[in-house]
Each structure stands twice: as structure tokens, then as C-alpha cells.
Image 1 (cartoon, rainbow, N blue to C red):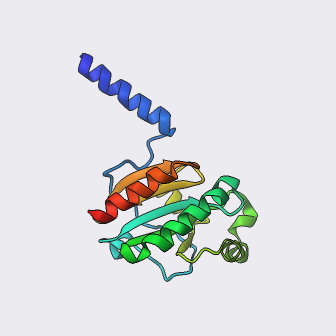
Image 2 (cartoon, rainbow, N blue to C red):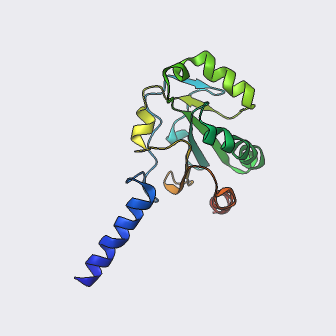
Image 3 (spheres, rainbow, N blue to C red):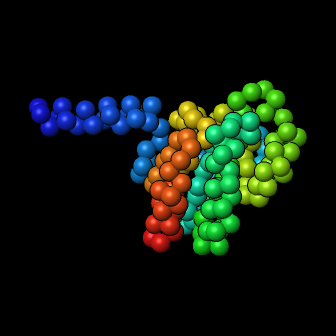
Length: 169
């Protein structure tokens, strides 16, 4: 009974700390689904990306917290792309004007983003990940399983260490 209570307490702490039961470590990575448009890339699938480490970055171009993370994501993309990291930005709009492809393209150009960006206007991929946050990082291992998550700003060194660890496997 005591063991069961401890497990329940730990589960409650985890759910409270992340805010919901988002895609969990060791879960298979959900597929990119319902994507209206792919920018900087042809359409990608998780099956195509198997064997690579994938950073899925949920963002929107007017979110100040997302804007603060972009330099880190760009740096990781440049530093690790030749070692097997693929960054996929999933642009999920908060406001109606963020759904316009021209606005997203202008933001990509303004921020100097060169990695693939999936325009998730209908929140289909967002929902597949049970995501609730901008920004949100999901690191996928070479076997296609979620290995690490982080929501919001910060923990850049921890996230980069997770990227390095997964690339070394």
C-alpha cells in the first residue's frame, strides 16, 4: 500500500510539474500530422527521420519566449546537423494573423531560420504531442522515441547535453 501511495505521489508531482501528461520519455514520437505547409523543406515524416536525433520545437513567431529560444535552436542546428541532428520547427499560431504563410515566411527570414518549419495551423501535430506550451522542445532519439522534453525558456545547457548524449548513442 505504501509503495502504491509513493508511486501515486511521484506521478502527481510529475504531472503537476509539467502541467499535463504530455508526450513522455520513451513514448514513440507522434507523426507530423495536419501540416498545412512545409517551409525550408519538403514534407518530413518520423519514419524518414529514423536513425537521426530530432529536435521538435513548437513555436510561434510573436511569442517573446519563443523569440528568446530561437538563437539557441539555430546554434544547435548549425553545430550538430552534420552529426545527425535534425531540427524541425513546428509553427503553431496563437493568433489568427500567425496562420498566414506570408507572415510565417517573413518571420523565418527575419530570424534567419534555415531548418525545416512545419506550419501547424490546425494544431494537429500540437495535439498529437499533447502539447500545451510555446516554446516546447521534444528530443527524439534515433529509434524514434521521445527522450527529453522541456517547456519554456531556459535549461539550454541541459538541452544541449541531452542532444550530445543522444548523438553519441
